[in-house]
Length: 208
Image 1 (cartoon, rainbow, N blue to C red):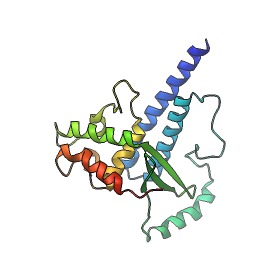
Image 2: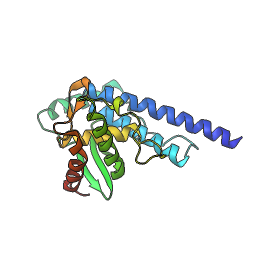
Image 3: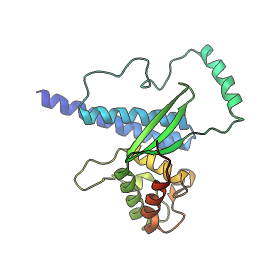
C-alpha cells in the first residue's frame, strides 16, 4: 500500500512540475523574467522532492516557495517607486557562471530583494546542445517543443524542462542561439558546430 501511495504522490509531483515548466516560456515571452525565475525555482523544488522522495510535508512557510509574495497593496507602493528609479540603471542580472561541473544562473528577485539561482549539470547542457543540433539540421527555426524529451543517455530520465530553458537562456546570452519572439529559435551558424561552440564557451565561463 505504501508503495502505491508513493507512486501516486510522485506522479502528482511530476505532473505539477510539467505544468509549471509549461508556464515558463509564456512568462519569458511576456518579458516577465522574474516570474519565470520563480517558476523555474518552484519546478526545481518539485523535481528535487520527486527525485529524493521527499514528500513528507510542504516547504517552509514564508520562504521562496511562495511566488505570490502576499504583501498588501499599501506595502507595494514603495516597491513601485523603487522600480521606477531602478529603470535608469542596467541590471547586472542574470549572471551565468560555472561551479564545478554545473551551469549556474544567478537572478535577482525584486520582490524578495535577494539573489536566487538555478543549476544544470554540464552533461545536461551538452545533451541540450546535441538535441538542438539534431533538430536544427532538419529545420531552420525550432521551438522548445520541437526538441521533445532530452536525455543525457538512453534509458535515463528526461532532463527537466526547466533545465532545458536554463541551457537555452545561456545559449542566447552567449550568442549561440537567436530567439525570434514567439516564433522560436534559430542558430546563427551551422547546426553541426553548436556542441563544439558550447564546449568552448563553457570553458570561458567565470567560475564561482
